[in-house]
Image (cartoon, rainbow, N blue to C red; front, side):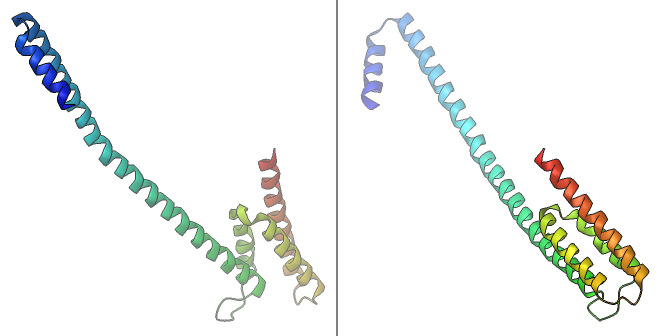
Length: 158
């Protein structure tokens, strides 16, 4: 690179005034192009850093959200199957219906949910229920949730 500059300098010294003016214009243009390239590079480096930071933030949020969904799903399943809250107080019918309906919001666990709800329904129906009407209402809610989840699965396969 330095030999190129030396040759350019030597040729400019021996060139005519018109040639020197055009060479100066070319050098000025080269300097402008290099300066513009450096300015663009100066903008691209922070832009890449910002994009990487945004991607990393969104990735972390996605992982956190998935973990929270996982824990919420398992808590809902436990609440439905136990029939009582953490203190042992029995759920009212409305609470269990709401929990069963809420399972529709977890399509990623659709196959597992259908299997668990089917088993739970069979367990409730095989036991001697205290309240047959409540068992029938819960069984209908389970069927609705299973139908919803299977309908979603079929839509995805199309």
